[in-house]
Length: 249
Ligand SMILES: Nc1ncnc2c1ncn2[C@@H]1O[C@H](COP(=O)(O)OP(=O)(O)O)[C@@H](O)[C@H]1O
Ligand SMILES: [Mg+2]
Image (tube, rainbow, N blue to C red; front, side, top):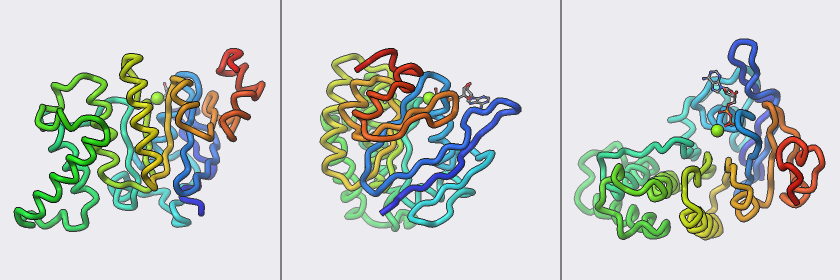
């Protein structure tokens, strides 16, 4: 069943077209990487899908429903969670408090501020589970802003996953990480993705990470989609190699 259906998505700033006429379908539970050189339009595309940026043209459907004009909070309520290329956690809150915000965002009873101590504990327990799955249980009480960069990125993923989204949009989750942190992150993401029902759209510049995580790859080049298919086929595609991979594979 198609979860996400994008048609003709475009975004221009003045005469400059950052994203041109992109069609993209994603099935439930599908994991797809979007790659392309710097400035190809990846973040712009994700921002349009997540409702953070107005589209110049095109439509987005979620479960067949036209959600083109909806802003990010309305899409979040429909199960779309996005992690940002720039870390977007609350630095003054502890790690576990950050994840609790994610848990609450998903919880339909979140508007009841006096839910009682039992509910508070449940939220905290669920937040701890997510921290544990991302290898951060030992950091629960530390201030998010004081965590190592790699742990902050993982925390951001934990916050997004705690919303139990149907579609998770990850923009360069390993950016700025050391080789060791990147390996650990890939392993954790692989496990979490295998266990969850979440569909994932992933921007990642590290091709090792892309090939380790995503069975399907979309290639953007100057705002246009120039390839879309199984990872191996895209890797072998001549136009892709010329545009981006520089002879890899
Ligand atoms: N707010 C903006 N105003 C003008 N140009 C922008 C804006 N945001 C992005 N762009 C331009 O759009 C192009 C695509 O950017 P982006 O989507 O961030 O690329 P990527 O994520 O693939 O590196 C770039 O040339 C960038 O400079
Ligand atoms: Mg980007």
